[in-house]
Image 1 (tube, rainbow, N blue to C red):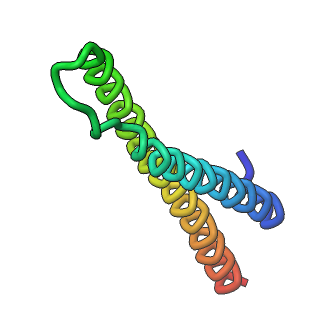
Image 2 (image 1 turned 45 degrees about the vertical axis):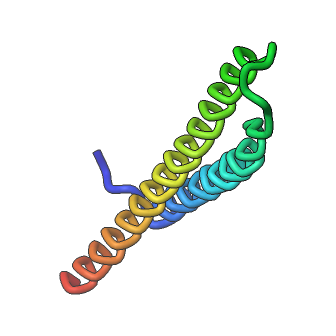
Length: 105
């Protein structure tokens, strides 16, 4: 298998960075959804009403939505950071390989 050309590496690195931006956008969107969902729980109610069971279930669901949005945002951020790290590693390897080839000639 032959080594990829510099322009091929540049395209691959650009694709990784674009994909990282997409994941960052999803991180922001999920963070925004978590912030909005944080206002969902209903806390101003009198216990022992006919709605107790409903409100307990509703608030439990709201908590689940908040948690999943927060966790999803954190995971999207981790994926974005991994993609950036891989792109950085590709660039560093390419720079080192170019430097090594220049020293051979």
